[in-house]
Length: 507
Image (cartoon, rainbow, N blue to C red):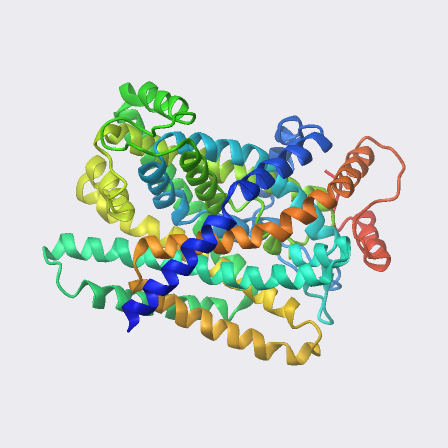
């Protein structure tokens, strides 16, 4: 019966996915990024240096220091907001997702990841700017924002905002399902290699799922502050460990680096992905796999990470927007690129096949380069990548539930939120044993659905993004203009006073 149900789900999702990830969506993603790039004057290039100087550099200088704006607004630090956001984006998609894209779409899919990320940098920037500009606070001073907020209060299409919140809830469940599935797949593969047995693997996967669900529940109950703290500790560690190992593997096969880049560029516009083992993929397949995995990895256009950024202590929308530029750069141009080069320099592309299991090949990539140490390290890195994504998306789903039930009194909203958290944890455990490709496909569909209302709003409000951006940089130049910090006059005045009193300095 369970198998029959999954077969039905697979059929329905396949049909829906073909529409959600059709050419209209791909054109909308690229078109939105292109429009925002033009309207902001290629901000992701022109202000990239500033994005570093106003994000990572001052953050390292201020680690350990904690500020609070006179108790008027309860929030988390910029770095904790970034860490939560990056933990939601840096997940299994950066390793297994890239490998899956190459296996099913060929090396050319990597170039389309880069293209989507280039425009995604300014798309994510715009999401953060609008997220902070239209965010609201509750009676306790907690800040909340996201795509549904700027759709409802910026575009003023509340029906679309409610739809966006529903899609966000579905995407949160889909994203957590992929992460748990990959954790159970990777760890059960390790178990199989260590014991030399393939028996009872489904039971092992279920046990892993239950353990992951239990640990996640303990963190999720603590809310954004606990999520932010956990993410700010795990993200730097796991990212640095992966970067070091990937660089060692790539340098070891340095003589294959030109060939890897050659395949990425030559096969991006080829009607056959790669000769030999991977044949018959159309140009459309290469683009779709690259775009879908790229969006899955960096989430630019989904309107997801802005939910975490909106809880930041910063009063300047543009300053937090610049974190979004660096976020996409770090996620795709650093982590995903290292994965692609590590994979393509380790294996002969002509021997690869779309029938290969992505999680198995990802682990094999580490074990081939580093032996038993690589297997053990992969068994640590992947679960950490996946786990931080799970807890970040639990917060995104929670905020979507809060918005959807916004008509209820504030004290009563905790009931639907609690129900969501319980279901989220249960589904974490359940998804551990589902077939890998089905989980990927469901998550891709949910991501595509979530992106549509967000992208429509970004296009409609692109002029406002340009206006807020100009306002910020004009003030930095000393031009006397009224700060655009919030869409609501009372909050705009409050944030303005915070800046003037030194709670947030113009940097």
